[in-house]
Length: 437
Ligand SMILES: [Zn+2]
Image (tube, rainbow, N blue to C red):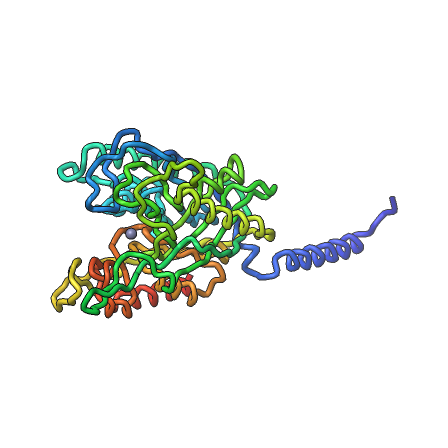
């Protein structure tokens, strides 16, 4: 080996440094990327099927307790972390966090894990074949109060597991379309020619067909989660059904997990679907006629297959990027539930909005039952290509209809606690927060 002088060593060192700097710029083309840290995520899932008969939620006239279980209910968690910032996405096979349970459970979870309000998306798929949550020992059925207490422990456990499991991941997203959801605001006329809107089938009304899928994989390619967002009520079954089920969205989750295999969770999120029901809606139960595929299974499979199609087309996974989140409670102009007239002295109704992004995939969590036009407006104005609009999230404020539907009336309008101007305020605020992330 030939000897080298001090001068030559300095020159070689300088050349090597220039090469290293050049290579770094090629690998991290933006200056900020090098400081972004490593995106990490962990997943966990827990069974939340009631082990006792419970009151079921979603239909006021249904007072009998549940009698059977068709398919298990679960809570699924994906917990992202980067540079100390977190995003904890919780999907649960429940109707929603009504009766003050969102506020109570969020408080417990935020303090247990020391996370910021915008870092928790506590959401439900709005299945109407699941227990009513109750923390009110006076009013709630004892079995439901007990169920809700157990749920609190299970949510803390499953979120803790997901946070503990975190490791480096890569992410990607894709979009497909599904005809499973149908607008349910049906125009009918009485004998005198007067029109009204009833809950039924309106195949001409707007629906959001988008199936948004996010793939989360380990650096070695092993997939850990396939999250999906679709705008439909999980109400294939109606008020006569006494069998526990995840309905269309829960059955889609279970189908995707069966196809993708062990170790992959497929959390579903209900998009803006206040006026969207499944194509087959509010049926009496699971049809057991020989050869008949029960409608919730048929539609859940149809949606699940599209999720898998989109999932398989997501090839380019990225290292993700930074996590940002924000949370606000808006005080929106209110109205009395059950009334169409807006009284001047009606107090405002609070509404929670959470926004977050993981790299360039965005999330908007809305604390109520948001009609589909509103979700479509947020997606259209979002600065991100992929925006998960997640409703029944961090709150259960009730129906939020767009202003133009107040003229027509109908169930979602009369039962809404919001005045007509409220929806525009939510869209503007959510879009503003997404831009500011
Ligand atoms: Zn609903």
